Length: 139
Image (tube, rainbow, N blue to C red; front, side, top):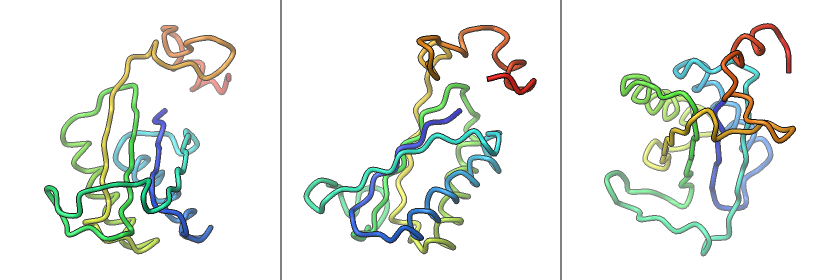
């Protein structure tokens, strides 16, 4: 149940944005043990003066196509899984929509089960049987 926030500069086409979010989801499914339909994403598009980044800090040089991907997860993942996600995301986003790996920044944050409410004013994952409810198709 990751929640993904994607920040980039305004001006990309709908096809570009679709490729971006679809490949982020694909990488999560392939490397992070995320069910295919477990998808929560938000795209934040910014004017040039609203997305500020260092063009050379620890990678680069970065271009104006810089994309910041923030992934909030509940269940911690291993360092190996995180490294696999970073690699796979850079690879998939290079293929489509054509992002340079230097322009992809990813930050993963972990939270506790009781930090999430999926609606109804309830912290569903704080209930010990939440996994069995999902496996059984109950919402």
